[in-house]
Image (cartoon, rainbow, N blue to C red; front, top):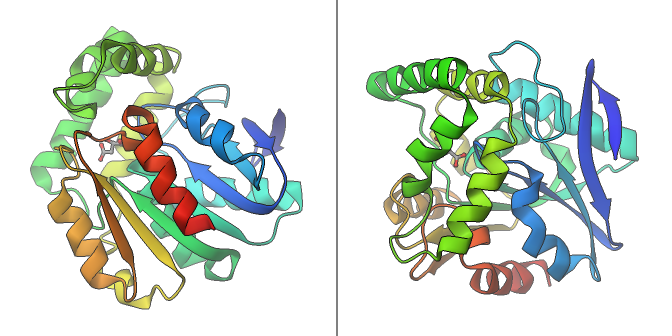
Length: 257
Ligand code: MLT
């Protein structure tokens, strides 16, 4: 499905019925990374799964795509669908966008799932790495970004089929979209001060072998968000929902009820 959202054509999936759950994908992927969750939960929940600005079937206008812009896009999509409140699930970049969404639309979040993400902003070295990768995307294409990133997206034990799926999703993205998101993530503010203000039920999920946003980062979220639950998935890297879907869905299902 597509809708005109904030002057871009946005692709999204809206399946199932029940309490709405909004799934925000990681970088440099698309809504396609949530296939296992769509299959598992559409009998009990309404799942709204956008391809975020720059990714999948959604337009990739010139960046940078700030997390605020991405949050505004998602809010406008919910308006378009007539959905007021959601359980918000964000993995990695999806988590960064979730923090922006919470700042801008707190009343629209009924419950929160933060997976393989962090509250902190990029340091100087991190920002420089983003710019270097944006130039690689622009000059060498999405396949170069896939080669560069896949080893850090999964645990060393990950099956080749998981790596192949990630590659397929990444190479379908436009270089401009990848660059726009990298430059937007580099600009994101520190969300650590927000943690103490989060009062909705919150679940934190992390892969035990996540090297990009390791369990120590999840622990900071868990310690900062009062009453939050935390689940660590063994033999699992950064894109936990795709690498270990059964364990991820068990944690998510127990939380969603
Ligand atoms: C992601 O998975 O969304 C990215 O790895 C996040 C990041 O680069 O900070």
